[in-house]
Length: 145
Image 1: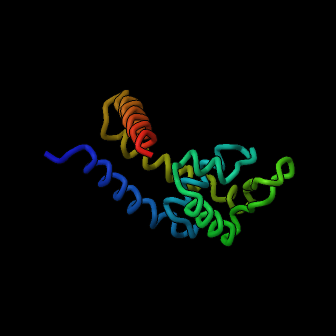
Image 2 (image 1 turned 120 degrees about the vertical axis):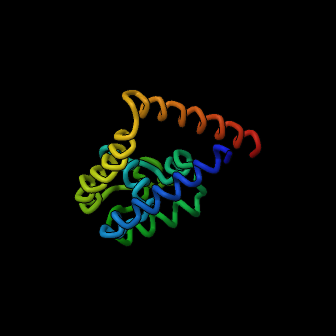
């Protein structure tokens, strides 16, 4: 019997494989879609690259590179924060908002695919369990670092 980590890796790989071709028409990768969804969920509220680093637990160079690629695609703009000139903030552009419906539809289609094979309440139970696993792994990782 494979360990739980094996299934997490395989599930992630399959989700990336499934979503990437659908998002390719928008010129986006799975990682960029995740960032874009987070920014869209903020409803125009300013977000700093540092906030993205903390939320996604990614390094500064990874976030910076991803944001630069998204900026070149015309999805967002990074600018100096007028209230704190030491920091930057991310502003979404119209092109990002134009993609919102397509991205949301793809996300909902993926979720419906899961739900179609589960009994009532199982998807929410799975979500709660995954959050617990994530939180435990995050705490353990923070202890190591």
